[in-house]
Image (cartoon, rainbow, N blue to C red):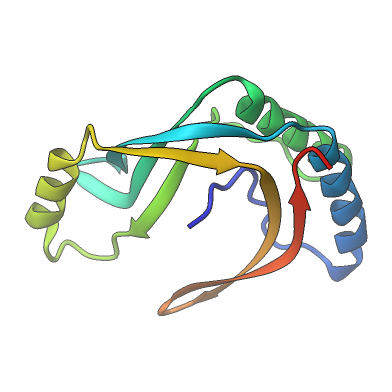
Amino acid sequence: MHLTLKFLGEIQPRDFSEIDGLLQKIAASTSPTRARLRGMGSFPHLNRPRVIWIGIEPDDDRLAALHSSLDKALQEIGFPREKRGFRPHLTLGRVRSGRGKSSLIETVETNARVDLGYLPIDELTFFESDLRPQGAIYTALGRYRLGG
C-alpha cells in the first residue's frame, strides 16, 4: 500500500533524472511526520463505490506542505498542478463490478470509524505503475528518506 502524493501519468525516460533530483531535494528539506489511519470509505460515494480507502489524518501540517511543495516543484518542470483538493488516503482496492456490492457496502459501513493506529511518513518513493488486466504492478524507481 502507498499514499499517492502526485500522479505524474506518462513520463519520458529522459525526465527521470530531473524528477529524481527534485525528489531528493524535497525529501531532504522535509521532516518526517506521522498520521493516524482512521475510517473506511469509498470514492465517489458508497452507493457507487469505485475505490475503497482508509482515511489518513495527519498529526500536523507537514504532509499537506509536502504535497504542496511537490506539486509546485513538479509544475515548474512541466507537470500540471492538481485541480482537486488533497485528500490523503490509502487505497485498499478498486471495485470493478457490482458483484458483492451489498456485502462491500456493509463492510465499509461497519468500519467507517475504524482506528488502525499510526503510519510513519518518513520516505518518498518514486513509483512506476504498469497497468495490467489483473491490476497494477508497482516498481520503485527511487526512494528518498525525509530529512536527508
